[in-house]
Length: 131
Image (cartoon, rainbow, N blue to C red; front, side, top):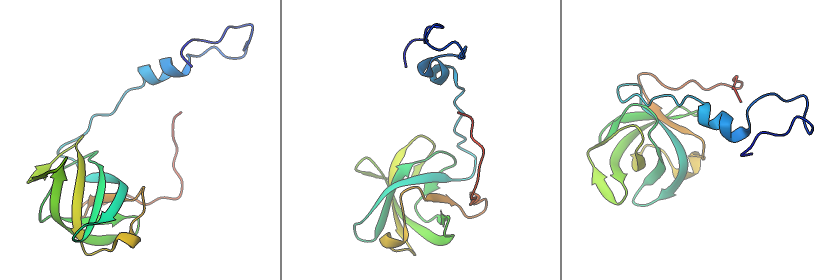
């Protein structure tokens, strides 16, 4: 993992070790002006439905309309919390708890995306990835 494998062990491999490959990978910048995207990692009930995740693109504020993808459920943002503090607005890179109306907790799964209504994230059955 940390060091390259000796040629005598793997003569067919001439590439970097996994850590070198990860270190050299370009990390895309998070766009604060892009469409809102927040992958949902958890959810719970607390005076309504609350989802947790990290904003990857765009921003969110109290009163915004959003979509929970892939089921295309339109929701309203009732409150945004960063740590334990209620905030007016949050942007890329921030880990949040977002209180929603218009959806029940049992209709949300980890891996769903809280997304912009204007430019919703596409729901696909296949994609190409570079490993």
